Amino acid sequence: MQTKLLRPSEDATALEQAGALLRAGEVVGIPTETVYGLAANALDPMAVARIFEAKGRPQDNPLIVHIADLESVKDIATEFPPEAQALADAFWPGPLTIILPKQDRIPMVTSGGLNTVGIRFPSHPMAQAIIRAAGVPLAAPSANTSGRPSTTTAQHVMEDLNGKIAAVVDGGPCSVGVESTVVSLCGERPRLLRPGGISLEQLEQVLGTVEVDRALREKIDDTEKVSAPGMKYRHYAPKAPVTVVFGTPEASANYIYAQLGENSGVLCFDDCAPRFAGAAVVETFGPSDDAAEQAREIFDALRRFDTTDCTEIYAQCPPADGIGLAVSNRIRKAAGFHVIDLTEDNT
Ligand code: TXA
Ligand code: MG
Image 1 (cartoon, rainbow, N blue to C red):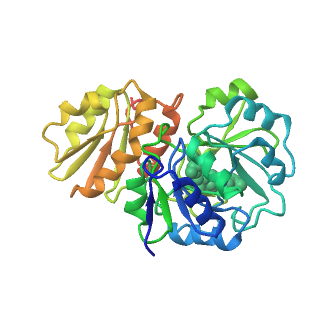
Image 2: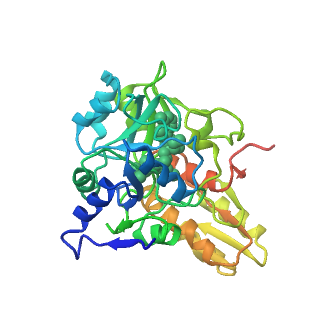
């Protein structure tokens, strides 16, 4: 299959073409404000099956259903409790996914066999226009090969999926850069399943206390049942193994410098790069004091390692607050939670 690169900036029919392909049951890479999505008609099991095939994604990992107006929720979820309304008022359209009990018309293949469904109303104007042009809600995971870092440019999507999907819509680089925050409203209390573009602090301003899923901080065994099945798989990973060094920028830079071997790569803050002048490979992901910029750059930086020969990677990591929680979660996952914590008291 030849993958078409559709450019709305040059071709006024690009979004309509994407909509027509989606209506015909094809899979299309689409820009959103978080990361690129691998979209198909959420109501068509055959179309959704093509997403899993193109990504190489495990079947039990549910997909998020994307909508372009609030009314569509009533066709997807069986209920929309006051907490959901409050979250929608505060953060939709935007980088938040809300898990609710699903209606029967959402096929089991879309929800990974669960009775619940993740719903997101993205803010990216092209994402909204494509959903409207398709005329159906769109199931879309991140548009990467399963296990690889998510994609934040159309070129990344082509790297992973060229020849496997009908088209990619080029909307330029994503403005948030990490995926949406996933919050479940299906239990007794709201629960954060994945940190993302909306911070835990922002959620708590609207909902009060939010429980934090254990899978966010620890590695979960492959056989364990977890609330967000996606959290248990190795993820975001470059080919070389990654070790995260957690601590102040200065402490982690000093520690990493002392470990460097001939083929070591370093993933570091912009301001720490001069410290690693002798290292084989140095990739930066934004200033140490700007977690929003780190979010925009992290996946591209992780991907760049795969064009190098380094055999191990040491990574710096921001503190886990604000959007830093999402950045730190992605780096820890890329490392399979292999973390050296310099802030722990070892005396
Ligand atoms: O920002 C995003 O959310 C992007 C863009 C394209 O919208 N999408 C995305 O999808 O990141 P994906 O499939 O890569 O990640 C979705 C995560 C997975 O960890 C999945 O297990 C979880 O959300 N999830 C989806 N539906 C769920 C459900 N019904 N219950 C629990 N977890 C769910
Ligand atoms: Mg993903």
